[in-house]
Image (tube, rainbow over all chains, first blue to last red; front, side):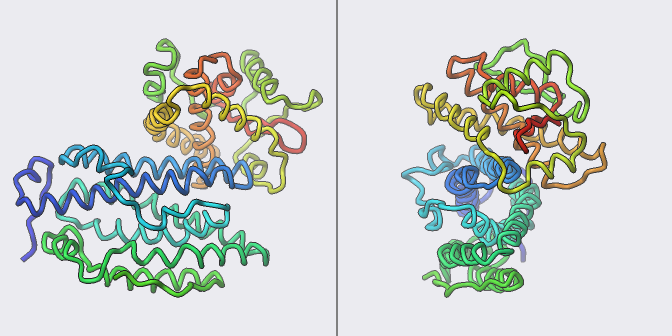
Length: 234
Length: 180
């Protein structure tokens, strides 16, 4: 039997401790990672963008990613996540992909192509979440995430028009992609089990990871690129 | 109503009129706007022979800003100024966080105004709408930064006034400054 829907923050406060903790973990993770992404990839990419068009577009995309953080952080504040856990800092370890500083426009486009696709799957899994305020954020965020992934595809397609561009995009994929499957969490995750028990998420980490790899393989293959060998999560 | 109240709070004049983002694109500049443009162009330290040319529509704005291999000296000059102003501000990290948050609060209004203006000219391209919104948000950010650095008369303020008047200064292309 499915878990009943929790329509407000007030109703949230009446849920079991385990439910509340699970929601807090998801919201906290999105709040931190959206801000990390904006700071580590989107903002630095403005300097690498080759034209005013690409620079201003990247400014807007950076602000959209920042706004995703703002949405998740606002909810985190409402449900009682401590302030220092909602922003990158000592108390929250970032995803490993954020530890590699951006070095080129080609890297940024490749990251938009494949990393934002991973974000789409994560947000997609929240679209039918039992906690409505979180579901609503997912629904608001999804169109922009899709645009960002399309941005990656369109700009990569442009770069692939030259042999050097293709080589640089492929190199970027080779460097960054191996870290992305772990974005979906460990296999047999206890956290994920709890998320599904309460209808917060729909699929296991393994299912999402397999779906991601299949979808992104098709996407990348369609552009004439290949994915490097994948490092599986423990 | 479109406004920049969050950007004004504590750092910008409280009696300022709300900006008319993208309201007069392609329309000839008024005398005051021409003065703002002249001050902005002077701040960019462009060669004296650099003329000004209007852009009439969104297609032209896209074509100009998207062309590869253009002269980015004017952009680099703005970046140098941004770095200099940031260095003048104590605790720059905290100030920039505040500015980013404030810029976020006007983002929806700016983006919406760009989308409406584009639709009026039959343009539904989500890319160029975002490009325009990004340009206006950058201008608001730069102007607030200059203000907080104690330089309210900075050429970033003139650039911002052109956006606030409803235009989009596009930059230098083919040796001429273009404004939409």
